[in-house]
Image (tube, rainbow over all chains, first blue to last red; front, side, top):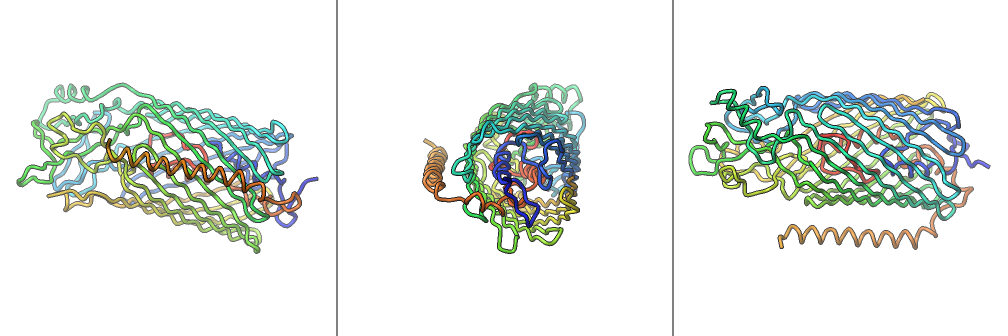
Length: 450
Length: 84
């Protein structure tokens, strides 16, 4: 006997739980409307357009995800994602009341930022292709396993991972326990080579090219690797006829090159005088900028709780909360709420997300002259990357979907995100600049499933 | 010992306490929860899946991964790009 919901295109009973299992894998469960019939492909396609204000990052990202169903609840999922990024990204340097010239990451060429403007590195262009696959199958009546692999390639970065998980059904399948493990190796091969952490950016002004080349080469090291181990333990519980709940604990350990090779810090003059709070000027007559340096290990713990609830009228509420803590000193809280208002053949789903994080122990908006210590920094790690600072983000969005028939759905989704940073406002000249500009982004997604 | 390390250890202990509490709740409470096989009609609805669209979730996870210091929770956080 197959238990179905005859009112709304019913599905086999274990599907919600099976999806929970899949969700624990990096490759998410992908079927939404498909009939799950053996021998059929269920396909999800989407195009995402992402845009940040102030000429920052712009991206276009097509996705195709296909799931082949086999007899006995076995599934093969294949997913292909491509994205093209252009635009500018904050370099980490502080604004100045003078124009600032920076060397491009490759060492060939420079770019200049106007006085008072936030330093953005406009040499940011990349194309990424990611492929992933997963195989999910029952071992017996009580266990289901899943194995998967992931690979992505961009100009300066290669990422690979394998993962596996095992789920155990208990209490008449009202409870599912899942354990999963993912192992990844990334190769970081930055344009121009990875900079030596906290070394001074070589600048062309006031020197001949050979002198610059020698200085630039001295700040470079070869490519580097990063390894990642993720473990996830989850409990999915049917609470009652209308409520499903999931609770996950995840631990993630990464080691190797965790620094962002394109981020820098300004060194600020703290000597009393006309340049108090301005860029420190080195012996070569140029401002002093240092490449950032992060710790070479990071351990993160996360707790995740999600609840789905169906109202009497058939609408569905979806709420989740995530707490994360790591040994870089960052803690974060994420709340995500969705309400699916279901109409005859369509639905409208408003969405709200709130995110808040504390800053990393080594986050500094700038370094002072005394911390720079004439080229022998008194700190071993420092980053001005705003993503490691005190950050609050809010996203408002909505999705509208139209179900053409049992198998096909057309949907459009729009999201708007506002991120704001906060922190040390500096001293002297620095106080007249906005050190923490907001980041506003919006994305629009068109989807077609068949 | 630096204050930050002490603070960090205290927070990790808080996580441990949460985990113990949750595991206890899961072990003791779950057997009393749930539905009979004939009461699963609503739970079987596709909109009641924990992740209704894997593609939406994957795209959003990638955006937030590259704009925030946190990742994972629902699934593996992992790597996958040089954006953070």
